Length: 260
Ligand code: MBD
Ligand code: FE
Image (cartoon, rainbow, N blue to C red; front, side):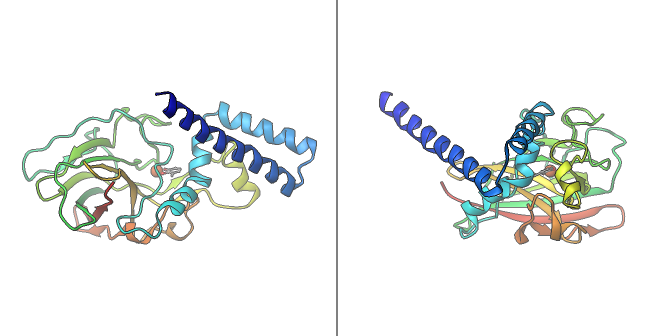
């Protein structure tokens, strides 16, 4: 016990020292004067008080952590968890050969989307009974539980892959997402004359025995914001065609999980 606690504290101290050191060298490099320093602290205070700290971090920093972790290793590329995941989504069940239904409002606006996935391990064999968590936004571009009038878990749920590692979800097509521009995160975009858009995306999280949890996203391959996602979350192997079948759209992607 004692030993583990010491080890853990060492890691915290190591990381904290680096954090302070690098913020100090950021101040040096930016040649921040005292007034600018005070502005910075006030801005950070607003970031916290408005609840935008996770948004700012996930838009401007999260992709950096992911890229340094994974770019060279085989398996599906992870992408951003983002600020809009919430715990406690409903378990969605379905009759055999029926899709898992993510929409909770009978009149949910949007194009109906059937999304098919297969989950396998890096060694090639399919993974059955993988917990798949899925969430995405609606046609107003809002996420349930955040600035949305929809039920808390609308367009959110989890389910399990079948014996072949397959799953099919019935939902609606997600919408390109403008990050809020009226708060401390978006104000920089205006100064820099940058747009606030993320391409439309599905969020997915996979949990399987003996494997690293895979947190990723899926993007329609014709989205207009793919090449300049404000949060830089797009990876080539996460693009897929959302095929127009007349009454609905159909898309699919295979996911490959890394062993622990
Ligand atoms: C999102 O919907 C998102 O997924 C990320 C990573 C950042 C901001 C909004
Ligand atoms: Fe998102």
